[in-house]
Image 1: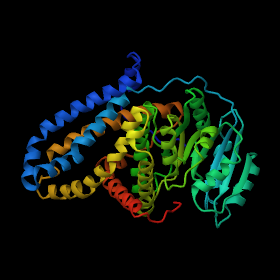
Image 2: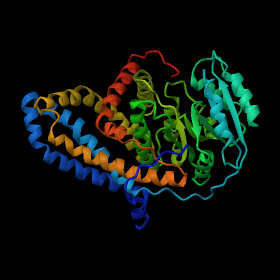
Image 3: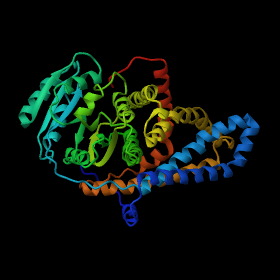
Image 4: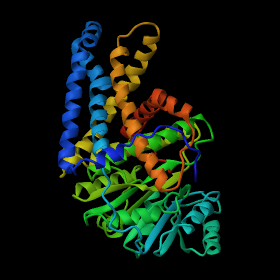
Length: 451
């Protein structure tokens, strides 16, 4: 899983942070908001001419709504993220060689081409405890179950193959949960390959955490980024975008998604929650249910897995619209203001305003960009550039963290400069419309699909 190195000068963020005394999570939270508020005030001051010009065209109230969605709110969120990342320090492990038995659950449907490869990477784990594997075939029409059974036996894995005919990933996962007899369970997608230390670091993190931590999300990265330009873009999204959000959320002990593709759970907590829910975003809803019951969810950047990302716009649209639907499902069930922990109130509150931001970006910012090419800077102009440095700084900080993670894991970062440039400039133009489509699908309650 090694990748060619990108020769960038190291910015020793971790070294800088370690020189400072420990800062409590609560203080980090309010320092982040203080810096974000100052940035918001600065943004409002410099945007007055822009607000006046746009207000003259469409009216002041609508101008405020548009500019807030394009500049004020994203700037506030980005500044909070930047400060949080700068202050973040992962807690030390109490153990790095746990031996607790673990069950790996792989719910799959028509995965005959990838399942044996996934099992081989499980076999190669440096984990010293027992690893049981439960593969649940969810109404496949190929030879997934047969190939999984044979591969497991050939590799000498403690494997059990189950069948669940009722469609739906949550049905397959709950079928497996009935057969879990270990304290910890790891969910893994059939196309996701584990770094050799992945399970060891996941278990080390939960063993080093307070008892109320019921799940740990692993770091999922793209493994097929060389297929085309679309996968090159997604490589940076997983490496910087998703990772930065999860790292920031983990700092406040409220990672919002222990993703089904690769996460560890306390089996007891899963049973208390009633297993995985009947939802298109079963992992999102389950995680929010944990948080709503005052449990905590961590993120472990050293627990790395590599997954197949969509190679076509059609499949990327299906994936991201499904994620957006899952977020709406969670918001329906668990209102941000009802969350018992203030950090989680804020984190889920950001999701509450995401539809607004995506709508503004899709229907206002993108047309405004087209107008800007014709010299009409009513919506997109020089003032909007103030958000860009914050986004770049956030990515740079995360890149420094991720490079340190890769060093510890003996991995290298692939050369993908074109993908990075396009990721910064264009990626959101894909994500926001896809999310809007997902919101509409959920509002209309359209049919769910496995993938």
